[in-house]
Amino acid sequence: MSRKRQPAEPYRIKSVEPIKLLNKVQREQRLKEANYNVFKIDAPDIYIDLLTDSGTTAMSNRQWAALMLGDESYAGATSFRRFERVVRELTQKKFVIPCHQGRAAENLLFSTMLKPGQFVPNNTHFDTTRANTLHKGGIAVDLPCPVSTSDEILNFKGNMDIAQLEEFLIKHGPEKIPLVIMTITNNSVGGQPVSMRNIRETSELCKSHGIPFFFDCARFAENAFFIKRDEPGYSDKTIEEIAHEMFSYCDGTMMSAKKDGLANIGGFISINDGDLYRRLTELLIVVEGFPTYGGLAGRDLDVLAVGLQEVLDFDYLDFRIDQVKYFGEKIKAAGIPIVEPTGGHAVFVDAGAFLPHIPAHQFPGQALACAFYLEGGVRVVEMGSLMFGGVDPNTGKKFTASRELVRMALPRRVYTNSHLDYIAEAAENIVANKDQLAGFKIVSQAALLRHFTCDLQMLSREEVGVE
Ligand SMILES: *Cc1c(COP(=O)(O)O)cnc(C)c1O
Image 1 (cartoon, rainbow, N blue to C red):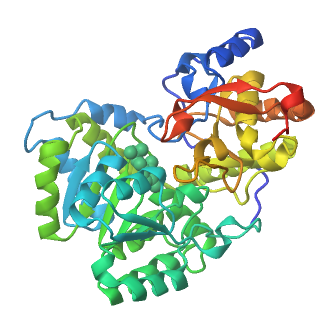
Image 2: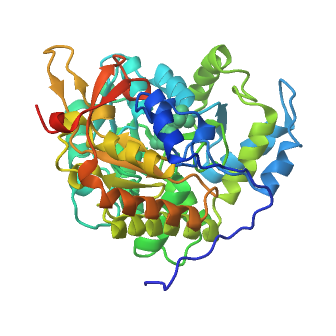
């Protein structure tokens, strides 16, 4: 099983984008000017940016070439036909609706399928999926498998809790549940994959209750790789065969193609239901664009048509998933605890365990995120009480998150392993001085999604740990 070394990058570099490391005094100043919110630091002041894997992909030579073939006709463009053929073949659905990104697909689908007061079960809603459900008056129900948050190293922690789903479907039925969604990979549970068996069982359950089953499949190819590697019976199948089997179990898909589409923008819905297609396209024309471009340029559709095929390459996925694992092991070896096993697109660091002297309400994850910028010019994102905590509008009481995590997302095909070694070295320096790290307090914040725009103040040594 175990390999001596990580496979080397299965590509060579033809075009480079210079990056620059500011000196420590400059970094300290940038951080202060940003009021310790890394979203407010300008990109040129970042040396290595692990803020997200969304829309940050490096395109291939084939994609750059496809860009020139873009047909910018308003209606019936050849770019759309190429895109449509690829998505049809991949997801095996008759109708393909292009959208400018994942949340546009969510908006279209939920506006059309969801009535106020109805439930949408999901293995775990991604933030925008949850927000779009709530926006239509729906109720987002998360049913992750019980081991999804355990510390045990297990495969397929992204699974749906089948027993709970069955209970829920029996209790509420198709009148109250317009669709069930499977998020692949399960982003909010650390990019953990879902097994083929779990997909099949969820599909059968939905069928027996007459409820449509949809995929939210931003990272379907990464998921297919985990099935090939870890699920009995799949090691001899190709990624394409596995993806086809996955999609054969669902009635429809929505995808943010900014991830496994290997593109910087884009998304889609694919379905077999002709009546649903008609209703979706009526709305599409009002909010996104004509059905043969859906808010994208023709060239974007061509880039996606190539990217959605390239992402099925075993060597690419083997390198990608192993790179995430390699990075996780380096961070752990430096002395910062991580969530294991590592998933498909990021390493999650347990800042709460790493900085026990900083309580949740003083944001240990933010302290660590700021330390990575200060120490190495590296941008990572807090996913703890700054992002998920807040003030209860009913009681006025402050609440914190269940875990204080920091996400280090890896853009696709962008950074080499020496970049990651550099970050691991910065991590060692952070570990050596961890007792010096202080918490934060919020000085101004928005009512919703406060982490994007809030201003923070660093606490003095005396204030750390004080309620
Ligand atoms: C990124 C993502 C979305 C939202 O897509 P955008 O392209 O950012 O609008 C929805 N679901 C999942 C699982 C995602 O990862």
